[in-house]
Length: 233
Image (cartoon, rainbow, N blue to C red):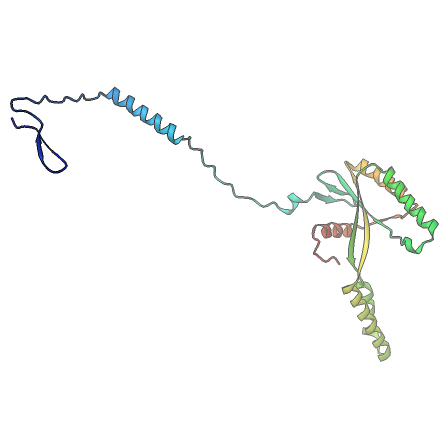
């Protein structure tokens, strides 16, 4: 039998066995399947503990955002022949407040109007809203009348005067606006709305009478409120 040989760092060979000695074989036990499974479980637990593995969350699909249509956003539904505007939350009625220039009134009349308006705000208990809007000056009927006169006249001086008048009306329509004030009356149903309308007319009677607004103008007011950059004619 050959002797067991080892080498030093310098390359010299060293005999680790003596002559006549036998080397006992090293026996390594083969693990069973159960032992392999136990070792595998321990390794997996150790890996989870170190990496703190968390269960994967289900990925939710993002839904496409759908833009709302205008009727879904605006609260207005319909307007009847009496001018009552049906809304999603109840009913609405619009009055125009007659403007009063208190700077041109004497002290007694101005104080009377202010106290009357104060009484209204103290006495009226339901919801209201005051809205001020700038509307373009509408001179279309006057322009049509002057154009008709211009088509029939043969007098040059008269025609010159009519042209100057037409130019003034066109200028006013393009560059001037009327500031108007409106009162919005609200009610949960038509009966409540009618009672609120009567109360508002009675309390406003002594300060600034309320003026009825035609339906086409109410539509223009609502359009202007929801489209501030638009021009209403």
